[in-house]
Image 1: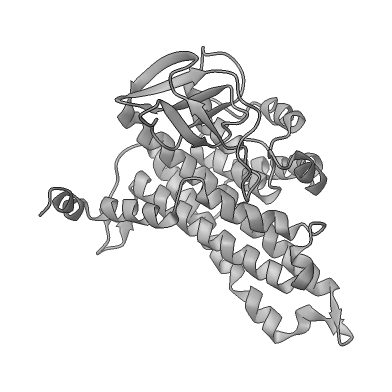
Image 2 (image 1 turned 60 degrees about the vertical axis):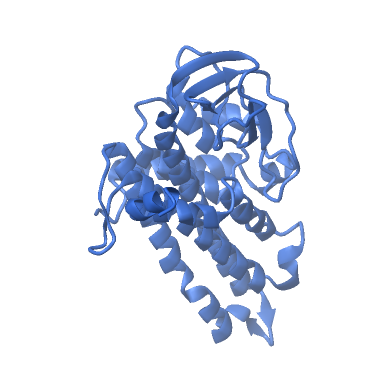
Length: 332
């Protein structure tokens, strides 16, 4: 596979890095808490018109990583996944429900549900889009994410297709969230490197101590690995066809499997990178005025929006060994 961004992707990354660096600094992130949404920033992102069916998952993953690096308080990932399906349903923020509606017709803890005008999700046998007024609030959470419960039946309801169509939408969400978590990990490493070169102890920067160097040395490889896996998964989604899941030969290009792999691994890497960075900040890492705590909280919160990571590993195992999963399900 290609290990470097294409020239077009590099230009895309440079453009959004400059944009988010200027428009989504730490002050903007703090101002948006606890809801986790800045409407002014959202309108600026939306005006850049990166949505629609013409945007590849690979290109969107480049932007998602930049949004993650600057922990931009906008629902970029959710709207990028949902927007191709809402043509003709009116303007506004769109999102997807990661879980089917419950018996009461409610989608629980919808990402961006507190601010989205349209929610797409599964209700019974159908994939539906429901336009309704966003509540503008939701439960407080570790990542200051705008989560909220939303009704699958109250509002302007449009049937988009069968419930099975949700699988690829969910895979796309996992991949773009994985890319965002790569961005979180990448910036966390940069914050750590900056701090250990500035912080003095015994008359020298603490970054000169081998214990500190060893604690950070493995992070670049992990971050690059998570980035490569996220982009491999994005490419598989863009190709669209079912792929291989041959564990014995290490041949995996199935988009649903790769999406789960990227999501779980990027979440682990982001948690590890933010842990190391916060650790080497010492007590300052827990102080609100230091930026690393913003990244530490999002690394954990974003990875938990889908639910317990162990459940995603079980889903991945079923994808790798479907015969075993089928036999277990039938009681054999």
